[in-house]
Image (cartoon, rainbow, N blue to C red):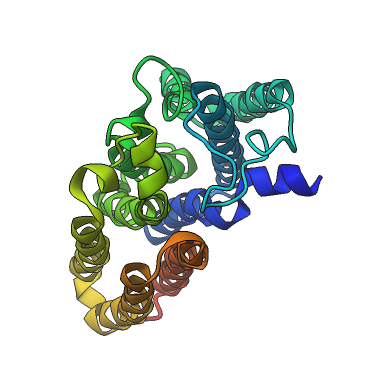
Length: 296
């Protein structure tokens, strides 16, 4: 069981949780909170990410791009802890569970949720599988912004409201979450640059180098907080406080990123995911206060 839990990569799950929490916060601020679809979105997001993590292990093993003793988190299939067949079944079983939860969302949305759900499922596989794996061609970061930012935040808000009235808030919020989520991938690829380069896996860190992507990591956090400050400009003291808290954590984590290497970066990856979750919880708290007219 411990090997399977490790394969789920629990340290990265705050990325999928944060998108749903941020979308729910948008629904609350736009007077559209609905608990049941919010919980369905949360369960779907977590299952989809776990399926993607499983698929990443299985297909990277099949392609031979994982090596024993890698600097990152232990890969159960590569190290022989989990059989390839078991990981394959787990991948598609988890995807099937996510699809079932997605079908329940149809009680709160329209038919076009079905093709979007299919796209999410395809992304979970295409990140590592297929003739053109996204993570092997420098497209992983863009995919994360879309599928961990834009999609979960806007759709979570939509499903709770039953309409797109909250898009004015959920769309910029999705950009914030997407940028911060992409930083988790930056740390992962920053750590694995040498291993990835040796097997021809062209992540953005392999393409642009550690120095450039280190600065990109810092810039993403600053740009995201700029969007937050603009969105909440009517309560700018609160926006400034939120941005200040996040940027203090972000700058500290960035310094660790550019000063460490190898396995020492594993805690930095967890800290980056934690920073995103802390920001999202602060944003959620502000949404509750706005809904309660606290700032009037």
